[in-house]
Image (cartoon, rainbow, N blue to C red):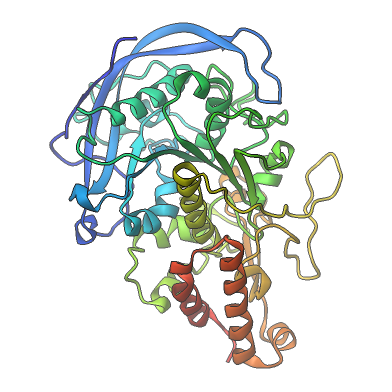
Length: 463
């Protein structure tokens, strides 16, 4: 294989979605690099069954040129040695970084490096499931005119080559320790990572661990296709992560992923190199990821953070049937997930096993809910164990981008009085007890405890 070239940092202002806060305040810098080479696609050479043991062989070659966004400590001595490489999400028609949204607080306080890879064609040339015209060549045509993507059959190898370039002594991270190189991706990116682990990782051997966040029932095809003839997303099959996974894999699922994306069919038992987590009350995307993450740099007063979590009823001009999911538990649980993955890679310390959300034994995925409508089982947090609203990954019909945001149904004062007869004092005591239980179970981090408790106080509507 001809080694790809990597040049940069590229002068000028890159198109990114890293938020509205100043990275420099936290000792971080953001850089953009070009990566250029020849990528190889793969085709089936044998079985590609739902057990994930896909048999493939090299197929076609094609030239490409894409970009990396590197967000790192300005001082290599502050670096933790953990590098988190996100497969940027293109469902919105551009390069989105949803796992940076959810994880940036944990990554920056740990001194980790984050890298975003423009692995798919839609992020560069347009398209995607929403097609908003936010692709790189539309937003900054002069800056990105030379980028070239041959199609998503080659996205897998582009992602491999990006990881390999970052490991090189002459790459963008020269001089930085690299003790754990972790692959992450949400939604469509997670669907591609399922196929990557099953069909590419054994040969590539670039990444030390995988955090697959919000996947559907199966992976993308080897040619990079996710759509049927009618243009709808395909969520068929029940593809597992191969039992002989080369490195540790954690899959984190919301209620939406289990039901709307049929991810429940991909459930599998935990094993020596695999964990499957399901977060009760979580939606595929929520107000933390959409709104609060853009300004949450760790310095927001609890009241301001709580205000930013207030659920809107509209997104990108799409009117929702009601308030979207406002629970921040996905953010905090993902903080724990990436910390566990890092420890699993470095120290061979496996993460805790998580209870599954209770579901009915039916052809269509149906979650079992309590008398309020809150899902039973799964990873428990104070937002579902001491609720002031019903948080769900379901509840909205209509356009797909309306459905993925889940729902919030606030309890009225009469319901709250019945649930917490001791008033605000009782509620806050129960909330803190739930936080402590989730930390003890390993699904929340001790470093997040004080903020979560303060947030619970700020958001509490009980007098």
